[in-house]
Image 1 (cartoon, rainbow over the protein chains, first blue to last red):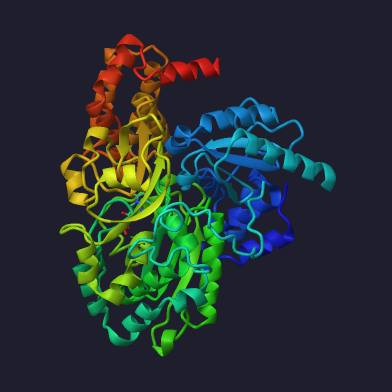
Image 2: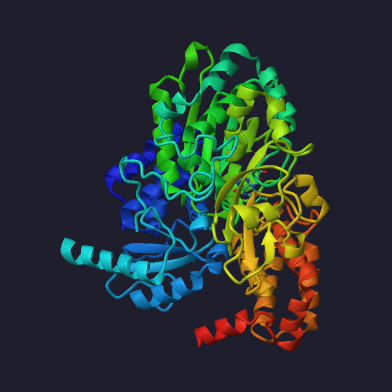
Length: 163
Length: 456
Ligand SMILES: Cc1cc2nc3c(=O)[nH]c(=O)nc-3n(C[C@H](O)[C@H](O)[C@H](O)COP(=O)(O)O)c2cc1C
Ligand code: SF4
C-alpha cells in the first residue's frame, strides 16, 4: 500500500515546525497510519524518503511505540487497560467478556466481520474510572460487561446501516 | 485503525469529575475554582484572576524575583522525584546565547496517576500560565508540551486553550504589551512509559527511539535539541500562578517544613470513592484513603497501598498513619512519587499484584541496560512459576537477587529501580504470603484459586 500524494505533501510540510528534522518522524508516521490503518513497510519507506531519512531509522522509531501498528487491526481497536488499578476493579473480566463478544481468542486478532480487535495495555491515566478502555480516540469509563455489550452492539449496527 | 482527532468537537466537560471537583470541596490552590462551569475557557479563567500572575511577573518582577518566590515556596517536583523546583531552575545557565526551552512533562504514564489529566481537563490555562511564568524565569520563549498519545481529549483541550491564548495576544510577540515573546507548542507521544523519564522524553521529542541518555550533561544544560532546557511536570507548573499571586511563603505555609504547599493525589483501586484530591501536604494516608476516598468496600480492610504510583515502595495498612510529607515517606522506605495512591484490600493477593506490576516494568523497559532488560523479564518468569504453583525457595532467592541487581545505580534510569522496589517492598512487608505461594502452593487470600476457577 502506498501513501497518497496528499499525505506525502503533508509529511513534507512537517519539518519546519520543529527545531530539527527528526522530530517530524512520529507525526509523519501518524499521517501514514491514519491513511492506511497501519504502517506497512512501503509506507515507512515513503515516510523516510519524504523526510530524507534512512528507512531503517524510521522503522526503528515506529516499532518502539504501542500506538504505532505494523499489523492490521479491526476497524475499532479497543485498548483495554489491565494495569493494577483496573485489574483491581475487574479488567480481567472485561477482557474475557470482550473476547467472547467479538469472537477472538487473543490480542490483536481481528473479528470475523473485520470490525474489532483489542489489545491489553498499561495504565491510561484514568484510574479513578477503572475499569476503563480507549477506542477511536475516546475514553470509556467505568466499563461493565453490560456497557461493553452495548458499545459493541452500537458499532455493529452502525456498520450494518452505514456502508 | 485511525485514531484521528476530529476537527474541534465541542468541549465535553469532565464533570463526571471525581475527587475535588465533584465529590469533595475544591482544594486550596490548584483546584480552588474547580467545578466552575466553563473554567476551561480563557474567559472564565480570566474572570477568576487567570493570567494576572503572568502579567504581574512580566511587568513588575524580574526573572530573579520570580525564581526567589519559587525557592521560598518549598515546591518540589510533582512528576515523581520530588526535586526542589527552585533549585532545578537554578541549574539552567543564565549566560548561554541562543534558544532554550521549557518542556512540560505531560506523559503521565505512572500506574495509578491521573492528576495531570484532571488538572488539564478542568483548567488548561492554569498550566499554560504556569509554563509561561517558568519560561520567563529561565529566559525561555518557547514552551513544548509533551503529551502522551492516548490523551486525545486533553490534547484537544490544550489545542483550543493555546489557540485562545494566541488570539488574545497572551501568547505571541508582546504578551500584555511586554516585549517578551512567548509561544507554546504541543508534541504528542505514541505510547511508551519511558517517555515520561526526562531524557527518554527528550529523545522522543527529538524524533528518536526514546531510550534514556546518560547524565551528565543534565537537560538544564543540554536538553531538547541540545539546548538548555527546563523540564517540569504539569502539576508543578500549574502551581506557579498561585505562588506568584500569593507569594512563596504563603504556599510553603500550606504544607510541611520540608515539603511546601499542597499536592494532587489520585486515589484508585479498592476504595469507595476513587478520585483526584488536592491535599495540604502533611495529612496522613489514613485521612486520604479512609476519609477522602471513603475507605475500602464494605466488609473489607485496607491491606496495602502504593503511596506514590506503582514505583513507590508499598506500605502495609499498619502504616496508614504515615504522613504525605515527602521526607516522612522516605524515612519509612517509600516515596511521594507521582501522587498515585493505589489501594488494595484484604481480599487481594500481594504476589499477584506484584507480578502484574513486574509485567508492566518488563514491557516498558527500553532495553538499554542489561540488568533492567534481563532482570525484569526474569522476574516475570519467576512470578509466573510461583503463581502457577511451581515455585520453590530458589525462586524467592531469585527474586531477591533480581531486586538487588535493579537498584542503586545499576541502571541508567529510574525504571529499573522501580521494578526492583516493587519486588523488594512487597517481599519485605508480605514475606509470609510469598512463602505460602512459593513453598506451599497456597494463596493466603484465596484470590488466585478463585481466579483459577474462573479461568477454567
Ligand atoms: C521511568 C520514569 C517515568 C517517569 N514518568 C514521568 C511522567 O509521566 N510524568 C512526569 O512528570 N515525570 C515523570 N518522571 C519523572 C521525570 O523524569 C522528571 O523527574 C520530571 O518530569 C521532572 O519534573 P518535576 O521536577 O516537576 O517533577 C518519570 C521518571 C522515570 C524514571
Ligand atoms: S533502566 Fe531500563 S528503562 Fe531505564 S534506560 Fe535502562 S533499560 Fe532503559
